[in-house]
Length: 213
Image 1 (cartoon, rainbow, N blue to C red):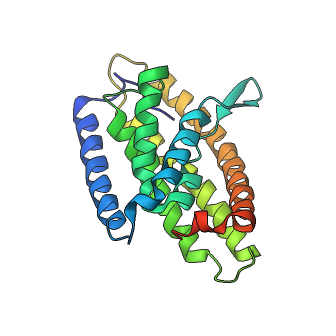
Image 2: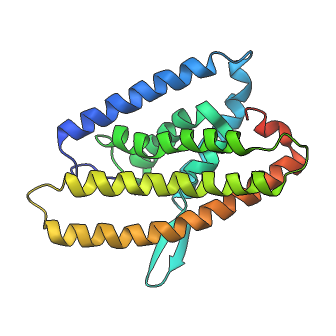
């Protein structure tokens, strides 16, 4: 799902940076409304590291494999810190492993970070006020985790298909993108289940980690 350098026209890359910049500005404004904005920095750092290494965890899928993204989980746990955490993680992925690119960093950050913010609001909407992690909360946690990945995959598909450069075989690229989309559908279910498991665990042993919700 990481779009590499050279795949998008410069105009799209610039728009990506503008969208990410605006979303980051809004997120930081919301963070500054907290009584102690610095309190969640250690938690954000931990989730940034988890997001960073997630791309190195490959799950076999037939003759291919998929890797975890976890943007929904990052959104559920971090709230408005999620976009900044994802942007930093993507930067280091691009610099250290050439996973993605610097020219496309804005597009990739918007593609994964904005769905993370949507996942946060979805989970917050469905989170039970009861002390016990009930079925309703689990259901919303699943859709937050799966929905964020599915939304990112949909944005990836639209952006890549509509901006295929003339030097590439459009038909071949479109087939590859649609095949990847099928893999992302399976991955969305996996990430939804993983989000339910981890958030359920945190609710039992460290509920204050989800205090931003």
